[in-house]
Image 1 (spheres, rainbow, N blue to C red):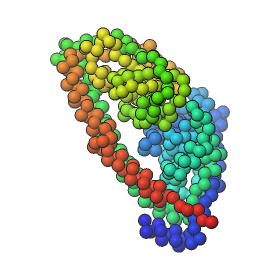
Image 2: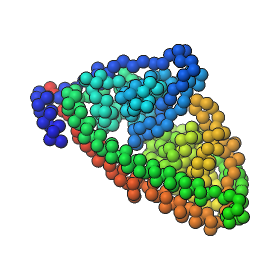
Image 3: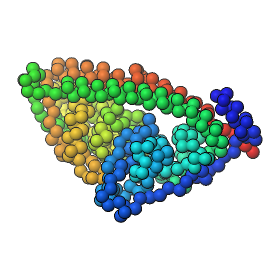
Image 4: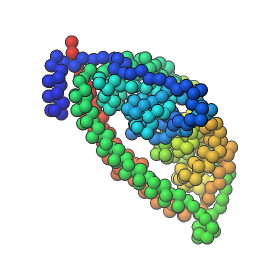
Amino acid sequence: MSRIDELIAALCPEGVGFMRVGELLERTSNIRWQDTQGEEFQYIDLSSVDRNTHIIRGTKTINSGTAPSRAQQIVRENDVIFGTTRPMLKRYCLIPSEYDGQISSTGYCVFRPKNELLLPNFLFHLLGTKAFYSYVEANQNGASYPVITDEAVKAFRIPRLPVEVQAEIAKVLDTFTTLEAELEAELETRRRQYQYYRDALLTFGEGTDAATRVRWVTLGEIATYANTRIQSVGLDASSYVGVDNLLPDTRGKVRSNFVPTSGTVIGYQANDILIGNIRPYLKKIWLAHSTGGTNQDVLVIRIKDEAKAMLKPRYLYYLLASDDFFTYDSQHAKGAKMPRGDKTMIMKYKIPIPPLEVQARIVAVLDQFDTLVNDITAGLPAEIAARRQQYAYYRDRLLTFKEAV
């Protein structure tokens, strides 16, 4: 901290000035699809960027024939992209080398810093500050589907610091993000172990003792889609679940940044299973523990009354959180550009129903693994959450300046 103070005192003796971030950027360009016959690109869409880690989690391979209309912007290594559709979801990231020359959605504002004036990783940290999101919230438009224009984003005023100061601040903040990345990598290893044991426990092959006592049924025989509509009045960030606040890779949900204030939504109740129906390969699923509402992009699966005596909700949840189910769901999805799960085929998915005592044993084991990798009050998830809070504190402290008069 003292090193930063010394640099600012030496290099900014008259105080820190501010400039519109757009004045510190290079121009970017769009792809000409007609000139790319036979070439393939990785497409960074709005769901590609993890809202917690701010890294690219998954992309889709596209070409001139399969590219969606939004696939237009060429990104380069060390560009910073920010999601301008529902901007308070805080989708932003620094483009790594493996995505140099690839394509991003027009739903992102692409920042290409002039390196002699603005360091990419310094800008990356700036886009996470409270000051930036206060500005975004004040300048976005649209109640139900808020957006902010690229022009408005680039008009945000940032501290005009010498690159030596930027580098020192970024160096401090990078230590936090590096530590978090290491913890995330360890957590990912544990998640893979969890997935292995989950899938092994839920496999009832021939020749196993459990196989002789298992009844196989389709999902539609024991469950249905809930479709009762409720008034959206009374819902809040905890009880409203949209596809945006369901986390990928079966990690549950977070509070919603958007809550409808009028009209009706689909109601859910405790022990319903909510599955994100857009891009099934993202594996978004949550077992409800209370009542609330959702939209048409989320499937609400409810156990039929006549099946409740032979089926534990958490056992069914673990079946539908398995790689086997999401592989099946993805294989039968409809639509190339934005695939959706086929609701009819989902209900034809076959599930094994062992005796209740077997279900209980499986659930007990998987609950322990689930706590280890997903419970934010314990273990690695809790440590990661603590590091994020620490990072946010120092980020806002280091990047807050009084504008020189």
